[in-house]
Length: 319
Ligand SMILES: Nc1ncnc2c1ncn2[C@@H]1O[C@H](COP(=O)(O)OP(=O)(O)OP(=O)(O)O)[C@@H](O)[C@H]1O
View 1 (cartoon, rainbow, N blue to C red):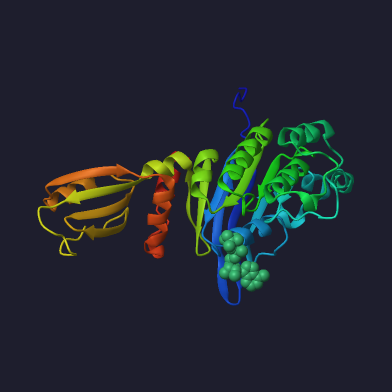
View 2 (view 1 turned 45 degrees about the vertical axis):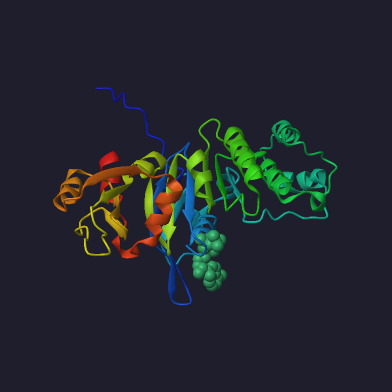
């Protein structure tokens, strides 16, 4: 019998139990995730959460204490130059030689790659309105980010890893940069992993998000799943709550607080059991509010860090 099943492409990034200690503290703690080929993965977390360290371990710039990672199906610890050429990395702050002109930066970078699409590069620079003769030091931060992006995509990488590419850019430039990045790069099944603090940006452009909290990957799911799975139940009583009414502890409840006559409860994967528990408290009214990613993230990271991860079951049911 002929097997008609199409081969499933292997994930662009596979991370298993990645751990790094600095000064006796696990700054990346048993992190595992997979990024499917063609996905835009937004890697979120507060300052010091462990995003850059994870990214550097993926790029082989930091050696993990335990765990392993594969890029494009190859072990990071033994990546050969042919595989490396298929991967682009933009470090935090877009380090470029400031004394070079854009043309010189291109001449400097090009010899490192066998494949180089000069036409695409020039189209991108033209799109950003950047003349080749302009010195890097005369460019704004946003324009330097654009040059880094143009240089990173000229070798037509299958996988692009960017560490906080919009750091220090203002809101308008950030939006333009990210939208161009997605338009230009995410063609032909290319995969992008980018870290950011700006949740609104991630919500707009990422298909999937990972959230690091204190070295642990606390959330790993599609952006839609995350947005839909965090809800706020608002229970309204006819008297001040003042901490006298508490929502029972149960799976999915990640935080609650009382404000005047209201008890607000943040719940992941809201279900009938939660609604029943809410009704048993006999409030005058129960309302469910959906939350945007920014609010969800703030609520989520404010709560007890040991109570998560909460998405594991949900992810299993999706796989
Ligand atoms: N080389 C190092 N030596 C010692 N500690 C380090 C080193 N690199 C990072 N750290 C520590 O590891 C933790 C995680 O840092 P990391 O840069 O990975 O976080 P991040 O999420 O990228 O933060 P940010 O968003 O501020 O860049 C921090 O507490 C940081 O101080």
